[in-house]
Image (cartoon, rainbow, N blue to C red; front, side, top):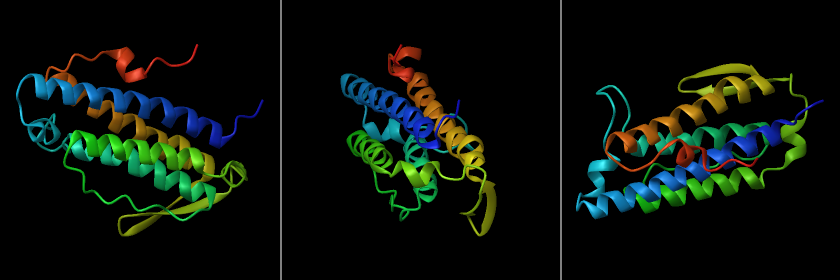
Length: 170
């Protein structure tokens, strides 16, 4: 049985973005209920050398949207990092989710073992198309959504595993 890259990518991003949207919504409510400026939450980091919540959400959306666009052979979208509120972060998650769901499946699924070059900083790295998904796009999606969840959990937001998982289908 073969599973298509597009199916794996859409299932993973859909579930993670649903969970991310939900925990961001609860983060908003938590900050308001405690009369805490949401900027305190959005700029919180778990360790001095880690990115704050805002950047975690930005990476969780940008890396999959850009990587999957490359796999689909479409123009890589611009995701300027301009968000300063929970609502703007939720809108960004919705934009990334819609973009990924609108990508054409046929080119994304074609030739999973063909090499693709991806710019990373000042360098370019080579991956097979399936390895780009398995070893870069999905790990980054999971890392940054998990870190965003953990920051909010650390700040006392009443969220748990089922919020993170966004009630996956049975």
